[in-house]
Amino acid sequence: MGSINKKKNKVKLAEGTAISNINAKESKSCEAVWIKKWHLQYEEDLRSLQIELMKMQQSMQDSGKRILAIFEGRDAAGKGGTIKRITAHLNPRRYNVVALVKPNETELSQWYFQRYTSHLPSAGEFTIFDRSWYNRAMVEPVMGFCSDEQNKRFLKDVPMLEELLVKDGITLFKFYFSVSKKVQKERFDSRKLDPLKQYKLSPVDNLAQQYWDDYAIRKFQMLSETNRTIAPWTIIRSDNKKLARTNCIKHILANMDYEGKISAKKLRPDPNIIVSGIDELRHMEENLMTPEKLHG
Image 1 (cartoon, one colour):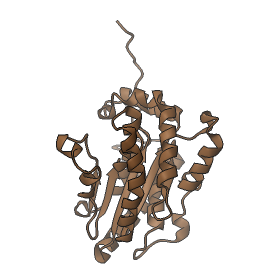
Image 2: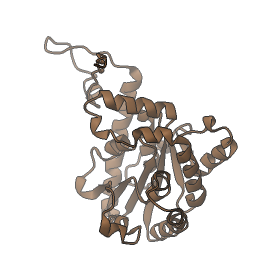
Image 3: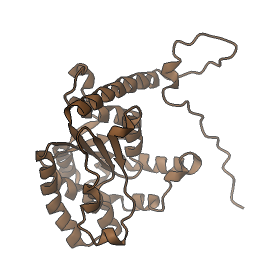
Image 4: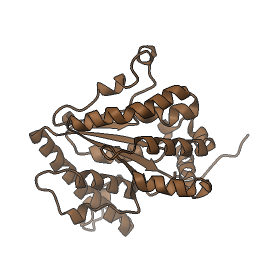
């Protein structure tokens, strides 16, 4: 029989618990818990940003503005956790998180974008694609789920589609979450140990590590073909998930106008976390021959 892993998982406080109890008084019914100062700061920053998101949503409802936010990136890069923090306190009637499953036979016979366009935002709505039509730029060609011709046609067609959306008045955000190979593996391993994360386990997890360089090549092709002035990519360095979350939210808020908005200084993202698509392309061009220096 194999050895039994007796390592205990760390017990984590629910997010927001520390900041909500920071001024709690000592009593016999309470137990003191030590919290790192940076975590308290994170919870304080996140709460402030979530209040701003609520203001933005109310303004969108009044003005009829529409947002489409596309979340892409490697497996275990922190997309889902960021989406969860963005939507945590929003009115569920005014936002949609779209995470489509594998297409069925009918969808496979349709125009590739058809199953996505039906989920585009209406007036006052904030729609998030947790993975999107960009599956055809990375996952599908790497895993052999589409032909080279389908991939090439997609890369030529998608900039035209996105231009139509933006010119029709949709505010489009395209986020690519960039995680290092080492941190990705650590997160995969933690999923095996934490029963609350095991729903995230996937047969392709190991393949994500195995095909690391293949994904890097597809990422470069995707950015080269689809990073346009009218619909640019925003890269989010996500080895630190908490910084990735707060900086992603800051980027959204900084690019939206709404009543009661806090100062631009408080919404200024960290340039070490938020990277433009053009800067990421330069980084990749400079390091194509030294893939160990490439970010995820």
